[in-house]
Amino acid sequence: MTRKTTIVATTPARARKPAARRLPAKTAEPVAKEKSQPRFAPIRTKRVFEEICEQVRREMAAGSLRPGDKLPAERELAAKLGVSRAAVREALRSLEIAGVVGLQKGARGGAFILKGDPDLVTQSIRDMFHLGRISLDNLTEARTLVMQLAMQLACERIRPTTVAALEKNVDRLTTLPPSGKASERVAISAEFYRLISQATDNTVLQVIIEALTDIVLQQVEQSNIEFFPNLIAHRRRLVEYIATRQVDEAKREMTEHLQRLRRHLMRAERTAAENKTMRALAEETSQ
Amino acid sequence: MTRKTTIVATTPARARKPAARRLPAKTAEPVAKEKSQPRFAPIRTKRVFEEICEQVRREMAAGSLRPGDKLPAERELAAKLGVSRAAVREALRSLEIAGVVGLQKGARGGAFILKGDPDLVTQSIRDMFHLGRISLDNLTEARTLVMQLAMQLACERIRPTTVAALEKNVDRLTTLPPSGKASERVAISAEFYRLISQATDNTVLQVIIEALTDIVLQQVEQSNIEFFPNLIAHRRRLVEYIATRQVDEAKREMTEHLQRLRRHLMRAERTAAENKTMRALAEETSQ
DNA sequence: GTCAGTCCAATGGACAGACCATTGATGCAT
DNA sequence: ATGCATCAATGGTCTGTCCATTGGACTGAC
Image 1 (spheres, rainbow over the protein chains, first blue to last red):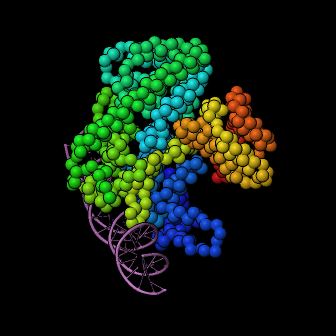
Image 2: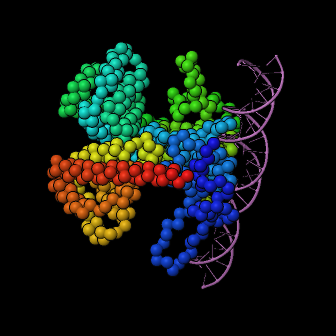
Image 3: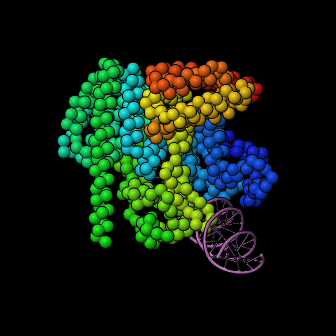
C-alpha cells in the first residue's frame, strides 16, 4: 500500500514542524492579555478538527491527495496527529459532509478521497432558502436568468444524441396520464433540465442549474400547481429551437415559460401565507 | 426557556423503525456490480448521527425550528434521543459544517439555528475544482457568463450609494503601490465584485458570483499574474457604464476583461503543468 | 443603591478506553 | 478447486472523565 499520501507525510511520529504543537498541552496558545498592543488579533482559537480538515484540504489543493487515495485509519491518524480519535472522527465527519471523503467500514476500509459532490451546492442553497435567507422571488428570477445562459451555450454545443434524449424525454411526458402523480411529472422535468444543462458542456453551469432546478421543482411539487396544458407544446418547440440552433427563439421560449411558472409559484406562496395567517387567527380565537 | 422545540424523540431507546425514508439512496457507491438483480437493496443502514440531522432538518423545513432558536444541550439531547453524546456531537458537527447551526460555549451556550452560510456554496465548488471535477476553463467561462447577467441587473437596479462605494473601491486600487502584495489587490477586487453582485439585488446571484469570484481570484493570487496596467481604467469605465445604465457597454467591458483574464489564467495553468512535468522528469532521472 | 469583583454551574471541546458490527483476507476441510 | 470458518482491521458507538469558557448569581465595599 503506497502510503505516501499520509496527512503529515513521513511515517513515524510527526517530526514535521508545521503542526508541531498541540501534543502535550491542550491550552494551545492563550495569547490574549496583551494590553499594550493597539491591534487586537481575532484570536479565534481553532478547534482541533478544523485544523485536521485544513491539512487535508491543503494536501488536496496541492495535489498530493487525489480522488481514490486512502487516508490512514482513524486510530493511526489520531496517533500521528497526536489527537484523540474523536477529534479525527469529527474532522472526517466534516469532510464527509463536504463530499470530500467517503468512509467505508470493515477490513481494507477507511477514508477515501472522492471527487466532490454537486448535490452539496443544492443542499446549501436549499438550506438558505428554507431558512429564509433566499426568497422564492430571487430564486425563480435567478433560475430564469441562468437558463438564458444555458440556452445560449446549448444552442452552440448541443449534440444529436442529446437532442434525441430530449425528444424522448418529452415523449415520456406525453405518455403520462394527466392525473398522474405530480412527483412523476416533476422527475421528468428535472431530467429535461438536466439534459439541457449537460448540453452546455460546462460543469459549473450544470451544478448551478441542477441546484436551482431541484429547489424550484420541489416547490412546484408541494404547491399542487396544476398541470400546464401547453407544457408539452412548449417543450417540443424548445427542443426544436435548440436542435436548429435558433438561439433567440430558444431563449425567448424558455424565458416566457419560466416567468409564467414564476408567477404561478409566487401566487401559490401568497395564498399559502394567507392560509397560514388564517390558521393562526383561528387558533388565536379558539384560545 | 420555552423548550418546545425539542428534537421530538420520545424518550429512551431508539427502537425507531430503521429509516423507511431516504430517497433513492445518495452517495451509495459501495454498491457492487449487481448484474443479475435489477433492483435490490440500496438499504444503506443509516448511522445514528444522520438520523439526528434529519430530525433537525425536518423540524427546520416544517418551520418549528427557526433561525435563532436554541437546541437542547448536547448532554440533554443525548439523553432524550437515547444515544451517546459523541453521536450527538457528530450530528451537530455535521449541521455546523452545513451552516445550519452555530455552537457556542459556556453558560447559556448551545446550538443555535442559523440562517445558512453562503460560503458553503463556495467551499463546495472549490472542492470540486481542486479535486478535478471542474476545470479552470469551465470555471472562468461560467464566471464570464454569470457576470453578464449581473451587469444586466446591476444596470437596472444600481443605487447611488453603491455607485459611490464602487468609485471608492477603485480609488483604493489607485492608492495601492504597483509592487504591493498580490493579496491586497485581490482583496480589493473581491470587494469590487461583491459590490456589483449586491447591486443585482438577487441573493442567489450574489452567492453564485461570490463563489466563482473567490475561487478565480484565489487562482489569480497563486499564479503570480502581473498587474494589469489598464485595470484601473477598465474599472473606471465599468463603473461609469453602470452608473449611467449603459447595459450593452457595461456587458462588453466586463466580458472583455474577464475573457482576457481567462486567457491569462489558462496560460498560467499550462506553464504550471509543464513545470510540474519538468520536475517529475527531473525527479525520475535523479533516481 | 450601585458597582466591582468573585464564585459557580452549565456547556462545548477534547481525551481515553472499550465493545460491537462489518468486511475482506486467510487458511482449513472437503 | 471449492466452500466454509476464522480472524484481524476498521468504522460506529458508548461510557466516563477532565478542561476552558461563559454568563449569571452572589458578595462586599463604597
